[in-house]
Image (cartoon, rainbow, N blue to C red; front, side, top):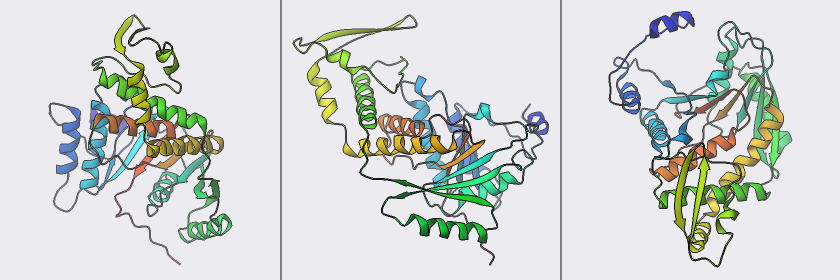
Length: 321
């Protein structure tokens, strides 16, 4: 079945099936053992787990992050397609732009992948646009000139754009989203509502939970698609959770929201967007994994086709002068 799928997609490669107890073990085993001698794969393509929110225990999120860690240990490049169902097949020729958002200067991996995609007939008609993000105090004119020269030396035809973002710009929406996300995750974990689906929304009506400040305890019931949740908590618990939200988390979410606004403004109609995959958290916990997945979802919200890339640090692009 896998081999016939490769033939149908006109992809040259090998199909292999591994019998393991779960998907994570299978992926980890393949990453560590595939190849022969020095001839080993250096790139791993792994789809973004679109249903990770439905797993309240956080297994999907943690498994994804552990897979990235294994790839890093093997010094492999990670390519993560997001919204894979929207990608064209071999007969759907695209005519538009491939947008590169070069946020982390990782040695040119994004340029290399965009260049290779252009050599395929599906993407050959697309133009490449390069966006890089700078702070307002940086010399954006000089940076644009340097990048244009760099693209010329790489023999890559690309339109270069420099996007300025102010560090001190803090949006109330970003603050509110970060605060309420962490409140809800911590609260539900504290109450151990295992096996139920956790839906993270842009706005979480926490105000309704603390409406009656004179009651020492309050019972709340959420009725969604015939599933009911019963839990008890006190306003003091919510205040404690609110005070524990770190300034670092607020800054990160603010950065993701603002950057997503810039990306959607310029690349909403792009046929493909290439962007760096943020480094996963070093701390292994379900809360850290959940926060990381939400951060990436916020960063990439509203984009129809996306390739997230995490370099190994060994990628080399040679400039011929």
